[in-house]
Length: 361
Image (cartoon, rainbow, N blue to C red; front, side, top):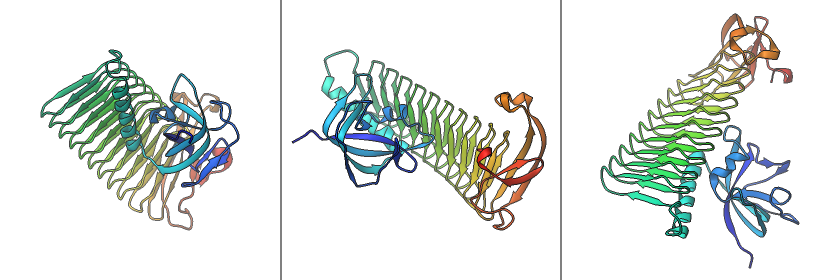
């Protein structure tokens, strides 16, 4: 019987990968598997998926790989001849799975090296820190603090007022307690704060940040970073180019400041803003507003929502220099379903709000 491994796979949002269409629950088979050449690929360590499918434009699924398997040495990527597509997993789930992955590897390697160290503090006010390569740190007690500074380190603080930080390359940080703070500053790091009033920040390149608790704040400042705040009054910000920001809670605020960034406000009374070049802003609730203030920005909204657009004049060949832009005007319109259609992208050109064409994208 062939080995069966649990892995994680990134897809385009339409569940395609390299031109191949996949479906949840189905099994697929190919003739050969050679890592980076042929076969179906996935990663055993969830955060490795971010290197191939950035969180701003992708979705992730649990998969089972079997048949012929082919691995490579620089990360956990595996090619296989057989693959079964499981359930979708969000950024918070990816972080949790990454922490579990590290913990399991620590158990396997414990005592073999100073790196792979594990630190655990379960008491109230306890502090936990793991600084070695592949180290894992966990503080489960009341007001506990957890810090993992090594490459691939995982940090988790599950107690009330707990703080979690993973500063190493591909580190994962998770704070699930009320008022918890979570921060992942390394390349490809993921940060998640699921408790009420939690704050989550991922500053590294391709980092992902998620705050699902009420009043939570989420920020992803690196290029390709994804930021999401799903709780009431949550604030979400993605400042890197191509970053994605989403606020789904009541009165949530979503901001994408980088070029080509995407911002979405799906909750009641939410505000969505995209200030970079060709940024996209959408309002998914009738009592919300979408603002595209950047050069050649675009907006869309459901019926009843408001759209705000700015008209700029500038040198297209040097669009990345905002100080060269000249503001010509701005307008606000309401999506009425007739003159301004719902779920349709609009931009502002020569003083008029017009539908987006392929040339505008």
